Length: 313
Image (cartoon, rainbow, N blue to C red; front, side, top):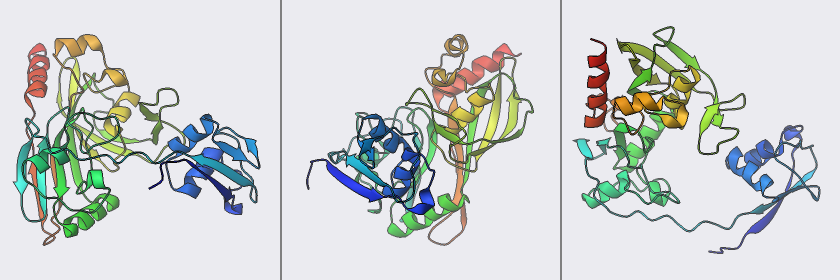
């Protein structure tokens, strides 16, 4: 396989008339708008021979030239035990695990820590071969800093049917989040698109041109300084709960990336966001019967909850 960059020359179809350069490239090349914007910012994109930025508009019949980056080296799965990863359910088609904090779902460039896939491999599990080599069997993910339930496909049948359920939004994904203050109303729906943060590329934000994102929340318990919420996701955007709660000005306790109060985090002895995937329900790919699994709070989140509850007595 060649590791040299290549230049692609693409005619702009009439249907993309007036689109921004980054949006047009994303549509034409099938990768993310963020990646297209990065190429334009690096001077790798020309429109009819002239270098252009990401926000300039294209016209039908014009030509875009893109210097594509060299292919990245393949990411390898390293079989490495994951301390604290609990097997909640295991059968011929799938395995349900409770992921500890600090563990990624699968390997990715720059990540040197443990992964769910590596932990399963170390424990002797064989997963479905569908999907990219480094994420075979993975049908959904949790943030590194979020703990809780994940399902991993072991059979090809399970991979296909579980992916379809996630696409069709029939999977019941429930989280508990301890958020600062008291949302008003105490139960509601947040329907706000999420895209890359306009300034900080490691963050996400509610943006006008983001992807549709819907979060439902209900109050479980109210405390003096915080509220424990039950959260159901309709969509599964990166950092969705964290971004939506921050947009309400009620960030997850301990989530310093999205504006949480560091004083409260210290008082609750939190070193990460208080967010846990507590319940996961789906139609089992083998027989279509509803399967549902739950996960209790890990020690650090339970300790923080005990502290905030005691402060409210």
